[in-house]
Amino acid sequence: MQILDGQLVSKATKEELKLKVAQLVSEGKKIPHLAAVLVGSNGASETYVGAKVKACEEIGFKSTLIRMEEETSENKLLAVINDLNLDPDIDGILVQLPLPKHISDEKVINTILPAKDVDGFHPANVGKMVQGLDTFIPATPYGIMLMLEHYKIETKGKHAVVIGRSNIVGRPMSILLSQSGPYGNCTVTITHSHTPNLAEICRSADIIVAALGIPEFVKADMVKEGAIIIDVGITRVADASKKSGFALKGDVDFKAVSPKCSFITPVPGGVGPMTIAALMKNTFKACSYKH
Ligand code: GUN
Image 1 (tube, rainbow, N blue to C red):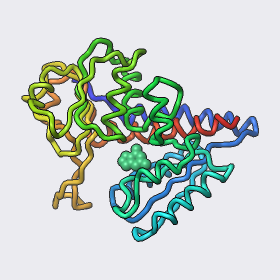
Image 2: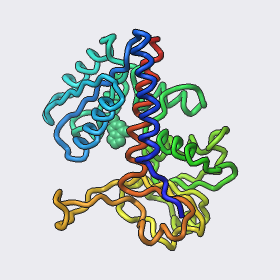
Image 3: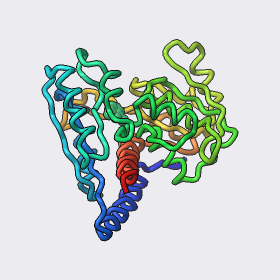
Image 4: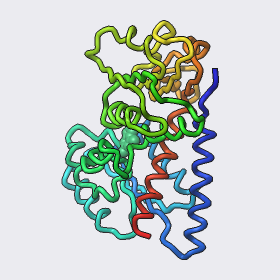
């Protein structure tokens, strides 16, 4: 069993970007600038946005964090996005999800200019991704693809089972793994809460991508010997022995599953850091459209 080390690959990806930024600076060109919008004070969202801003600093990107109150109106948020759309110094915009219930994700995502949509959530960018055209790929599935590439994991002809059909992870992941080209060419089964015989389907998988958000859902008896396991889940579970009061749990029972598989991502330190690295690559790309 080999650990797929997201920290290591993310670090290497960020180092590459750092060199590219230094090159831009030496050429007197514009450096990438990411704007992150955080509505409310969800603890996990705070952590994720903080990590995104920190990564910008490490690489040498500019970043702007806009905090808005939980009670902010939808119109106020849309107005902020419109201002960012019009600001020529801003290359990438991300609005951290989930949003408070009174705000429509759909309206927010549709308001972000596709050329600045570094999350790759706008329908114009999703459409391009589905057609295999050059665009922003949502950061979590993009990060997973970068990790498969780094470890040169053969995917051609393999049966990939994706658990979860969210627009952020499961759905785009299933499309990328089925696409032609390196690290694609899988036969993909996308499963969800209405899938009967999930355990049986998982047992036939060469690759499992678990993105359903239920801690330790994937058990050893659901995994074939030698399978490749990608764990996207990261749930805070109460744990009095931790200073923070919680432990982070993936969607895979790591202790029981890891001895059976060929490769596995840990939680934390697997997919999470790769999501950040992929977002940074998208932000660089958004800026290079301007060069
Ligand atoms: N919430 C969970 N994952 C993501 C992500 O990739 N982007 C944004 N904007 N919000 C998220």
